[in-house]
Image 1: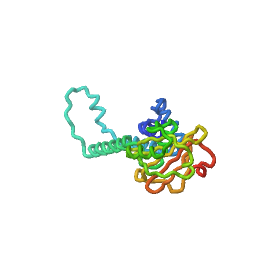
Image 2: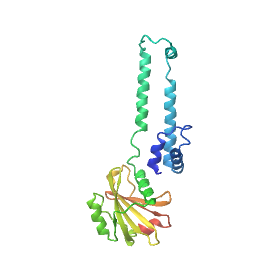
Image 3: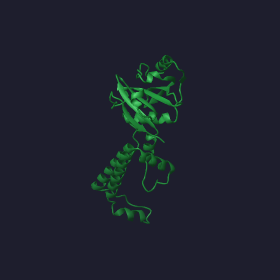
Image 4: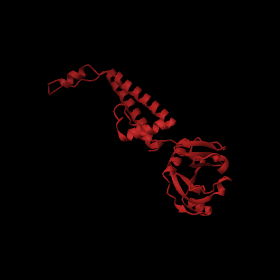
Length: 241
């Protein structure tokens, strides 16, 4: 289960009620290991508690119990007071606000979400659309699929053998993936995305992040952003970038 999948499951999480649900338990484990998701969950639970508190503050008209328990089959209609109508309207507005929050599209166009999705996918081994050692063929194939093709390779990475590539998608945005042989039966994955697809692109200077069992270097160059993921090793940036 990745970051987005865990967030989607936890959006409907009811503490004390859903704790034994296998999907929720897995999502909670992901959240415990993901600082960003853990913070989101804490805020989400506080919001849920605040909403429940607001609903509990809405008074129930005293006549409701008697009307429900009345044995008469014919009950004369009573018109609610303005206060009751206002409370009902407020509750309805609050209800739809909660629904809007819970069921809004998961994820965002933040770079961190994109990087996490790409790197975690590398752990499951993306399927390559093209298996070749010819980078020019990969560029042509990516261009034909609408994915970035005019990308540049860092000096260190250009020394490695290309294995293949594939055209991926992230929030409907095309992503180019190029796979490299590190030389020790390990793979490196380079992901290229248009800078306009995210609202907070990384800095030009490569930044190192650890995501699950892989390390990732990210940077921006021109109108494209790059993510290089691979097994952790010393001197990652100096060696490949």
